Every structure is written in structure tokens, then in C-alpha cells.
Image (cartoon, rainbow over all chains, first blue to last red; front, side, top):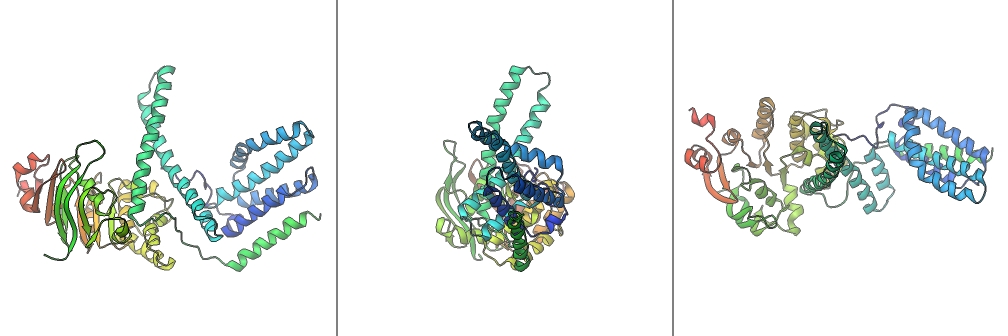
Length: 234
Length: 243
């Protein structure tokens, strides 16, 4: 079973990863807010924000191919919305909105890929996000591994036996695999939930709060906010 | 008899429309009275274990530590009972070994420092110190089993209920696991096919067949009764046969 589909580069040693997760999280969120409130066609400031993201990307040492492929895939819906918004107005809007969306998605990709998911959950808890929301995220994270694990196991079984089968049989096999995947995931998730209950789980995921240095965390965040605000005065 | 830890009284259970998985089961287990639950496939061993901490509830009554197994008492019973699942992939669900072992102690409401201590101590108990940052799902099967056990040790339970703890293990890992369990000072309930382990760890045995309690008595008496063993899809362990 693999566990690094989300936070694949969480152990990457970089300048970016030296920043506490709490600060990284709020740097990313405030960056997105600054982008969101940027007036349309303010290219100069958008390019400066883009340069800041490129610096963060290089500081994070995230592989460029990984960054661009993930960001582009996630940005597709935003590109479609940008296209529909610009069709009847100004075609230049499309490029501006698309770039804005791409940058917003990009900073989140950097954050999620380089931070362990549990530490992000811990940040959400520390800022008093609703427990239900945090628990849901935790469940999604845990069950996604189980689903992938079951899928890989079924895929192996299929490959072993599907030698020389025609397309019709392949389609039938794939539909059977899908049904089996659903059934097995259900059983597995039931068992896992039982294991959680038997170890005292009461509906809320609890985490150890890492002892950081709150002063330095806030100082880093304030510095980032000063830079983001300063861009608007350039 | 010492203080009763587990008491089953006329417990019956069935999965939907299937024939009863447990039928009118009654027995009591005293403190430190290590007991094995044995029987062939489908005898009801795992189903019985799941009743101990209320994951399954059938007809009749189950009491653990003198408390009826019902919703109000789940927290207290689960705090004092460790349940090991047959498949370690069911038991381990966190991204790192540390988080998995810490899961139980955190749910007990312990302070962060105490949780960390418990994790270190539990991993030491199973001989896997330094595995904290490893992913449980990238370990060998034997290591997964030992980590699963450490998730229970971290809660410092008074009762351990283990479902097939030695299944699919190589001889060395199996021996290591037996050593760990021998050092455990609480009460042990073992559901297993591994009758050699039963001989080593449990002076008392309960034999099940198709959900019914067939025999309850001294391990050596039950395991050396060839007729009884054959009738219940088991066989006399080699260590008894050749002595």
C-alpha cells in the first residue's frame, strides 16, 4: 500500500520545508487572497506575484514536471470558466483569469506536496476549523489509500489471468473489477473503522501538536504579508 | 477462581440470514487466566472476539471487567481491552508507524508527552525501536504484525484479545511474537489455529465448532484428545503426538 499520493515530497529537504507548516499554510492562503483581490488586467502585479511563486517553487525544490502537470490538471475547470467569462467580454480576460487560477492552484500544490497531510490537518485543528470538516478530510485521506490498495491488488489479479482476451471480455472484466473494488473497499473500510473504534475512536481525529516557535511562525507570516502588500505599491 | 474479567452468558449471534455464527455460548475467564479459543474455519472464533469490546452484539449478555458490554460502557471497556485483528492491514491505517501507535493513547486523552513516551515504550516492547517514521504499509508482514501489537501495548490494556496472531509468519517472527506475548502481564485471549502456540501460552482452552461451545477445559487435556480434535476439524499438535 502506498501513502504518498498527496504529500509525495513531504520529506524533501529545502528552504521552504524549513518554514513551519503553520506559516507555510497561511503564506499560501494569504497569497491566494492577494491574487483573488487583484483587479482584472493588472498584469504588472500579477507577473510580480508569479515571480514570487517561482521563487517559492525553487525554494521548495519540487520537481518542475510534477508541479506543472499537477497544476495544469487541477486548473482545467478554472480555464473553462475563464473561457466562458471572456467569450462575451474581453478575450484578454481569459489569459488573466487563467494565469491567476494557475498561480493559486500552484501555490496549493506546493503546500500540499511538501507538507505531511497530518500536519496540515493539525493546522486546521489549531485554527478551530469545524471538527466535522477536519474529520471528513482525515477520512478521505485514510480511505483513499485503502481504495488504491484494493484497486492495485485487483489489477494484478486481472493482469495475471487476462492473457489474450478480446475487447468484449476486457470490458466485462473491468466492470466486474469495479464492482469487486466497491465491495472489497466497503469490507476493508468496515474493518478499519472497527479497528479505530476498538482503540477508543470517538469520531474526532486527534493529533499531537508539534511544538513550534509561535513567535518565529508569526514573524515569517508577517514578513510574507508585508511582501505581498508591498507588491501592490510597486 | 480469581476476579472474573470476561463473562459470556447464553450469547448467540448470526450474520443476517446465515446460520448462527454463535449459539448459546457461556463461559467466564478470570484475571490472568490465559485462554485459547480454538476451532476450524467458520467455528466462530473471530465473531466471539468481536463481542468482547462490543464491535458485534448478539443475544445474551457479555460482561467485561464486570461491566455489561453496551454503548455506555464501550469507552471504559475499549480503554482496558486491546483487540488485535487477523489482518494487520485492517489494524494499521495511519501514514506513519508513530501515528498508528499514538492513535489509541491520543484517544485515551493523554498528554502529548505521555503519548510520545507510550509510543517509544510500545515499539521497544515489540523490538521495533526507530520505526516511528516508517510507513506501516511498506513493512514486511511480520513487522506489520508486531506494529499492530504495539498499537495495543501503547494503550496498556489489562486484557488482550488476539485473532490469529501467528498466522502467515515465518518461524523466526513467530517465535519473536510468542516471546513478546510471554512477557505480557495482563490477561490473554487467543483465537487461533496454531495449537503449538496455545500449548505455550494458554493453560485453558475453549473449543468451538460451527458456533457452538464443544469443550472448555485444560489445554493439554483437549489438545491431546485425538478423537475430539479430529471431530472438530483440528489435529493433535506434533509436540504432543511425538512425546
